[in-house]
Each structure stands twice: as C-alpha cells, then as structure tokens.
Image (cartoon, rainbow, N blue to C red; front, side, top):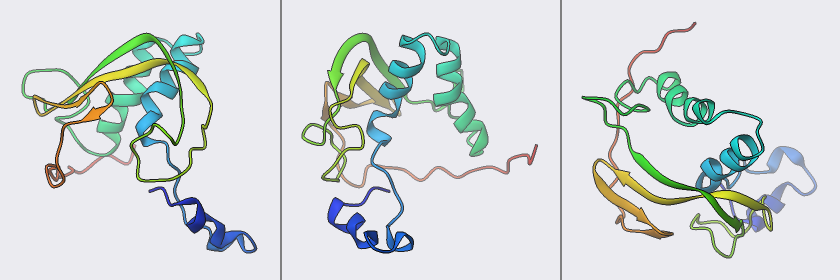
Length: 143
C-alpha cells in the first residue's frame, strides 16, 4: 500500500495525515534472505517458514505456502549469490521512492511461477492487468 512521496508529505506538519503504507513488497524475499540467511541470523528452513508457510497458515490459505500434491503454491527461482542494489529507479512498484534506496543485498528473485505459468522472468513482469485471481480464505484458529 505505498503512496507517492508527495502524498506522504501531507503529514509533514500533522503525523495523523500521513497515508499508511511502505513500498517494500517487491523486495521482501531479497531483504529477508540477505539480512537473515546470508548474514547467518536465520536458517534457510526458517526463511521458507517465515516467507511462505506461516503467512499461508495465518491468512487461512491451506493450499498455499507449500509444495505438495493438491497445493497451489507459487514458485520462486532464487539466486542466493547475486548481489544488487535496491533503488526506486529499478523497482517495479508504482511508487517514486524507496526506503531502501542504495541498500546492497545478496540474493535475487530470478523467476516466479504463478499457477504453473511464468509470471516474472529476470526482472520482467509477463502478467497482464486483470490476471490476478481472488483466493478465498478459510477460517483460522485464534491460537
């Protein structure tokens, strides 16, 4: 839910008027891998648990977050060794700034398969507007 920088400035003199949101969704896998796994703070298994398995459970999406017969998990092809620098000039989010501007990370999403179809290929989005699909949540436990 990112907003353009000019929109964020609406709260310059009154914090309560700052629109909520932070542009980071595109880089969350790379940031978590780089700062967590690459720096030895979490294991690769914990990375998958935190980035995939747990969100699917928390949000009541039983067929997501795992690679198993009957699941509808999306697949990310990830290069754990590629280094790159995050920047608003190169991200794909519809926002004109990055909170991570100039931050170097190790690990790069190379491809994404969505419902068996190549959706992202080496920084290029191959999906068209309207190709998303609503996924109904199931009831989750309060525990």
